[in-house]
Figure 1 (cartoon, rainbow, N blue to C red):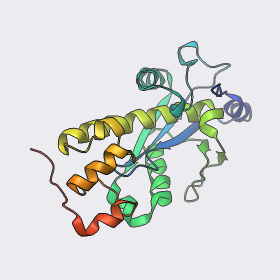
Figure 2: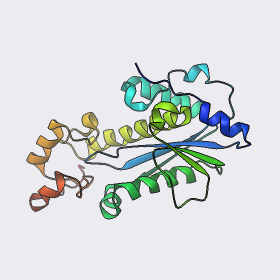
Figure 3: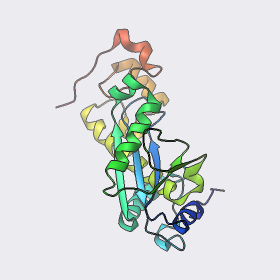
Length: 217
């Protein structure tokens, strides 16, 4: 049975005087291709989860249709939503953990208002002075983080669907850049394209046969 995220952490912070509590999460950390995308979501202080958002869960627990619907509802009901992303070339240059933190910092910059406290799925953003609480399994336990997980996942999936047109034959619209058997077969047949993460296996073993396909025109 899926864990139901609650407002416990947010309510404790609101009670202590924090008015802008941002939940943060990312999508695409383990993918072979495409950016890592982070989202930050802020809700006005709530006594309980709004009925429209009662189905919010960790994005991994939801089917695509539910994620799409809930993403729209989160953006409608939230006080602020910000999205940030880091491209594959930056992931290759600095590593996935550093890129993840930069994507989260970019999402915060795009909120449009300064946060008083951050609730983050697992991570701590050491470069930021904002008080923050990293939560293990935060996307399953904390409502704001779960909402952010949905926005990040839907935002990234939409980008990978667009990449299907730019780089046909890889199946990006289906597997969203993750390491499926279909994706591995496409790599063997076509080589790498510009949105593949060259520092990730098995891409690093294909460098000698790299084709670097240009976008389709």
